[in-house]
Length: 259
Image (cartoon, rainbow, N blue to C red; front, top):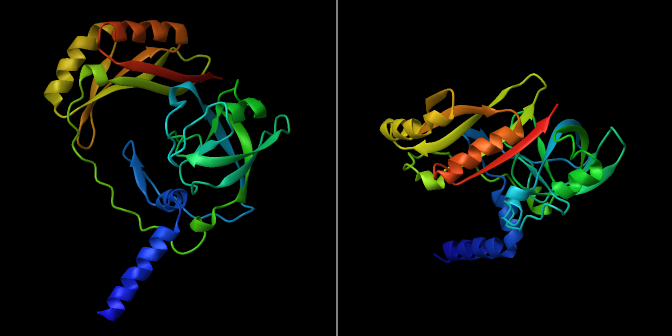
């Protein structure tokens, strides 16, 4: 009994020895699932380097909390990464102009296969990659929080996809991330999550007149609508604004860059 009490006190002491930020960093080593894809954060060695594709994010996330619990400032210097421990500092270099900047990972993303790093608007502006949208950069690991370097990574939790209740039309958001090629005329978008195919069909009827082609897609636990909007941003925004005015969607954001 004495031994058990001692171990309990010891584990409690170790738990509260971590600051709130350190506990978030430790938690960031757990596996997590976004868009039915599970990501496995991992440890890093200082000095690791490679060449990757980097994008940037701004207005839509400005003022919201990052994965590290900080308020995102799009004009500040920070970055998001899918699997690096939060708190990691990277040196990012734009090989096109030689500019470099150190950024701290305080968020998760970008959740697109061809991009590994999401820079804050301020960092992308400094590096000269903002206008291009998605650019090739070189990264080097400058530092990793001690709490993410000692001990074993947090045991990945098994992710469960729970059946979602149908969202009200007023809660449906449309967000599109795309690199538009010169010959491209339309961009695919997804609208809503519905718990039954009947509810998805009802919503499809209501929006069909605004789109040429619409599909109902079945995911694990819910149904969604897939359609297409013009690749010309002004035309796309006119269409989405019309849907918003009709009360069919709540908000929309187009994060597009052009080749």
